[in-house]
Image (tube, rainbow, N blue to C red; front, side):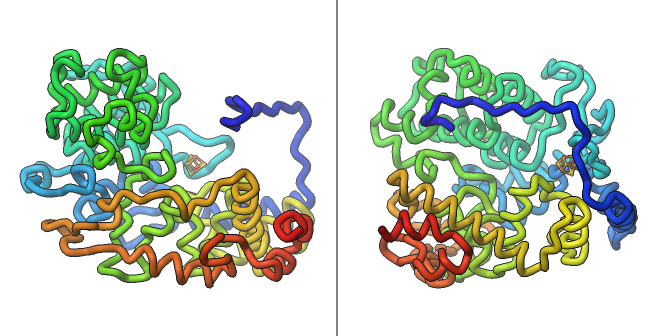
Length: 413
Ligand code: SF4
């Protein structure tokens, strides 16, 4: 889309969406909603939990388990941050609701919009409750535990139509440049960009959104901004192929284990994607199958084979087995990858900032001493996917087995 200067595709229709078997679809939906209302050991049903907290419920666990990239994966000297509870962010949002809101026809309704900001930050009524990624990007990543500031920064990004993961990561990058003397007050127009300075974080987010002053440079993303700023700033630029990474430390699963998701970031963009496949083919396939059907990941669909195959058949009329659905997901992974190869993009060639994989390892926190063995993960992963280990080309046999004969012809002329 970017290469075509395409911003969006909008589709509008006036006819009802046809459903092959309305009676079966309705029966499955009723059962599904009932399952979402079953109260779990924490005293809440999945539906209640998602409505009450949205994805922000995971901020506490992630900050303490090592999943959240606290202080931009630096984590040193932040004991005070943990004492002042990053996890309370999720509970802080609750009394601020006006109402829960919803994706189209979604029974879960895991979104909430908030009352007008009447404290230090005057965000407008109707601001959205920050989700996990935004709450962590403007929270733990910047060593900030001021929830009001997170709401404000999130709202600035939403109104400007810019991504909160990248925006928070860019602000954290700018903080690190400031802390290391690469950016000064002159560059920031007097904003003291220090770890945990929430006023500075919000002020710089506004500059970023409006492309004002240094915000105009930062708005290019950390890779390009580091090239413009120079002075060794590239060592602080954490990105994969120019994209800032999501709020999950890729070392989180343990020392050198193949299970660590570092390679996922290298070859994809966010956990739950291609390289989770290395552990479970099911997750690979269902994730990408969900993506192409438009089903929401928070709907717990992949946990239930019967539900997935049942609703698919009821809606489309196609009698696909679970294996067929998984094959569809694998086809997506391969087709997308071959598209990139054809366009001259090979993710394996993208450099990875050593800090992202724990080189050198952190010295404190749950991931102290951990280095992700990304080379081993990728070696193993390529074999699993039946992709060539140096070119990343899927084998001809793999493409043919997925019914991608035309792609195989392109790739193996
Ligand atoms: S579609 Fe998904 S993200 Fe949207 S409200 Fe429903 S559960 Fe939440």
